Length: 512
Image 1 (cartoon, rainbow, N blue to C red):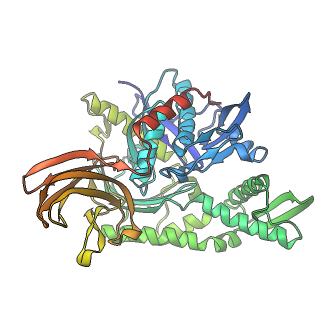
Image 2: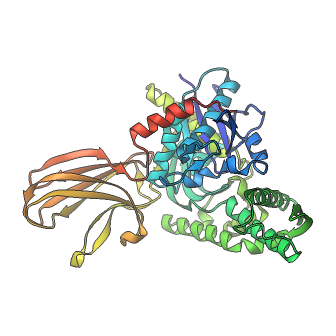
Image 3: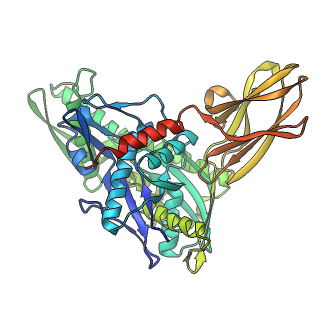
């Protein structure tokens, strides 16, 4: 079988893994000999052409060249307006920046394995919507990868845990990474991994905890007669330096009760002391948000804490003591320490990648105590369509509710509004609210229909695949004929021509 890798494409750090012939998944070291690679890119300009550095070397150069440094791009995936402009004049989309990171991971994997790699499973936060999932798949393609599947990060962690420990029962995965938070409840039995419920916040992670420290440190510098390092007048080097100091302080506070931050600004030197108690206090609302989401998942799945057999803490941000204290306090039990917070997601992705390659070859990969792997996930967000409600008011009609097992195929019937109506616009939404202002219109499609009377029935069928990608079929129920099955025209994603152009653009760049 062809080699297939698993990639944890993280907000702050990424990792790549492989399932060996022995049945053991292992992390592949990068060219620097490290298990994880910073998800950071620095563009150095040579003769007007960008030379991208990815990883540790890029991260260490952030303070010296902040205008050519980009990180946390995962938070911009699916945003068609976001661009990073390097000083050479080149402009990059989130997909292209992510593709550069993926290209580096691909090349490092090939170096470690000694042979080419094209197939990969890439993980995404469980709460990523359709636009962000599609953008991730596009990034993989631009990097030269065949993306077998995008897999939810908590699901990947549970797969790794289940395989390495042969555990069974109900598992709660609390995944707090550098930029996102997910919580997923699963049941493991005889190689079957069934997701019972999931929730999350794609804009909550270690980045936000760092921001609180940055604000605190900046205020203390001002109190000691220094400049406001976060003001709009502060240069980008000062901001980059402040983030670096905040990250260092956060890491120190995982092992000690007090961290001293030393920095220079405005021609003066400053020492700022931050205690663990202060850090906990300034981030208690962020912790409370994760608690609320965790309790919500348990409620949705109708599972009590006493019925949770295994508690997994995944993501580098779970190293913060107050996170472990919160979750273990809620659960009334210690977290399972057999799971490596930085490795579990990539390892699980590698297992799923190997299983996917085997399945495409008509084989069952019996890796779970002699049984094949079977993963049953759920939708992280509801899918619907905009339609006319009472008094002509537009509403969001949910077709596939949140936490529906996928793949899923569900239908609803709608009706034409006026006589002689010759077209219908299908506006696909993602979100749980009936009010259109609180959901996202993922895409739309205009379809021609015969000029029927008002109130003629039209059926909309949604199919949701294992990648949580949407396909739509519309049925003319008057003539009982299909008006077509199609992928929606996504408003937030590249089209095929743009992906092809980006692929050529990234292929011409040598990643260091």
